[in-house]
Amino acid sequence: MKKILKYLGLPVLMAGLVWSCSDLDVPITTQLTPDVFPQNSTQYVQATGPVYVAFRGEFSFAWWWAQSLSTDESILPARGGNWFDNRNYIAMHYHDWNADNGIIGSLWDWTSKVIGTCNQTISILRQTMPEGTEKKTLISEIKTMRAISYFMLMDSYGDVPLDTLYGDFTAHAKTPRKEVFNFIEKELKSAVPNLNPASGVTTYGRPNKQTANAMLAKLYLNAEVYAGTSRYTDCIAACDEVINSGLYAVEPRATYLQMFYPTNGPQMKEFIFAVPYDPAAVTVGYNGQMYHARYDVPRSERAKFGLSFTPSAPRSTLPEFYAYFNDPNDIRNKQWLTGLQYMNDGVTPVMVTTTKKGYDQFYTGSDGGASYTYQVNLTPNIIPRQSEALFDLGNDEIAWNMGYRNIKFYPDATSTNRNQKNDVPFLRYSDVLLMKAESILRGGAVTLGQSADALVNMVRSNRTTSAPVSGVTLEELYKERSREFAWEAWHRNDMIRFGKYEGSWGYKTNTDVYRRVFPIPTNAMVLNPALIQNDGY
Image (tube, rainbow, N blue to C red; front, side, top):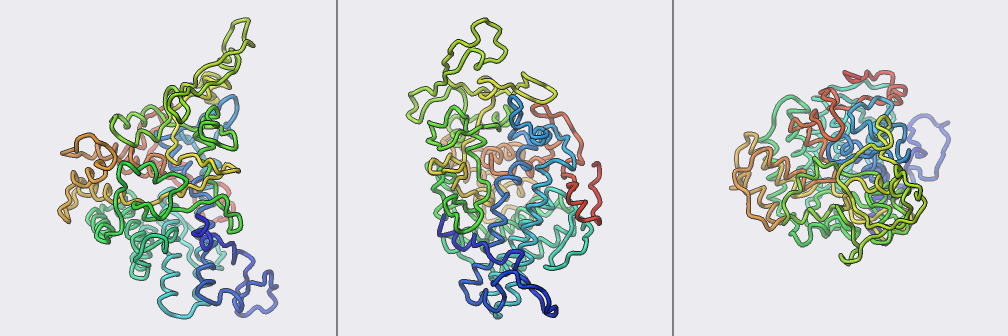
């Protein structure tokens, strides 16, 4: 994705760029002043680069951790003290996090940074660009990025400060979630007429017209959660805008897995908005932390995937979530590593040589130091054998092989620094179809002759050779979404909307409804004394 990142990652116009209309004593800290940059169309696009650099930074990191570890989709326990990290990860599983949790703090800091960078960029473009279509389009793109970031912030924390003025450093109190919802809706709707209608290379990595429409659909689908009133008819209308554009299609079964390969990109028919990654593009800014292979590939399978580093694979799924993958004809099953492991030829076993004690730390025989060779066998259950209090599975081969692993974002064998070049989708066409199906099931009217059954089967027919479904229920649609968007950081959003977030899975029994939003992080409250902690925390 180097060509894409050339303009999405240019690290310019950051904090050192000074804007002052009256204070002539402000020191110049950079040569990139308004009278020299940006001055032409190419430079105007480059001036938007910091927004995409900032967004890419924690999109596959803090956003993923918060949206997935807090659900039945994934879990990250300790193994021999490794990955305990002040209990940050396992607290997400138990739903007993607090305002000092590092994941929750990082998510707040990241979304706030993106919003601040958007505000700065909008200010720069307003002051330097001549009036016209180009200016409207670029500013609308950045406003859409800001709306997406506010969606993430509001979805995660509920009431949040609304701050849209660059240079305003006053303390902002929280704005009610409903008002933030209204702001996001207004921003997206006003952006739609000015955004580029094209898809493909020319708009890849930047929001186009259908990005805003798909984002509106997401907003309306969750309107009852965010604003207290259902908006399913509006969700269907927004989905129909995307469908009627004719720009997208469901990837066929043969290429479903390829959507997430290191070679993916603008050629993928389903990508409405994706975040480009390329660890080799070091000259165009921070690549972000796209480390999926590090966290998901067992350390015993480094050679199988040709990795230049040893992965640690601390995270896995839970049996409750994997149970949704119960159709043997479904291509989506192949995103998982389960059971006995083989090399990519499918014949050669993945073997590990250790000691009897190294295999099982609780082995009591006198020959614990004797050599022991075994075939790697990934088991489904997560069992804290070493310490229940620390949720530590142990520091032996049995512990490190616990849990089925997800390799949807297939390991990037070309990476030399653990950072992958798989682009990560945020909005896909299959999501639009399933959002419309759900809205119909929840009371919306059928449009375009597309019933809920027809919409679900448009996705399923490209994923499995099993017979089409009929009489789709909300529960069945929930399971379909779980299969389709596993590891894409939408599961928390889905669980809350379907009323499942307070359920029990794994070792989690907490049923506190207030945990549908995270606490305002302690560091945020220190920096902004106008903030009031969320209820329950």
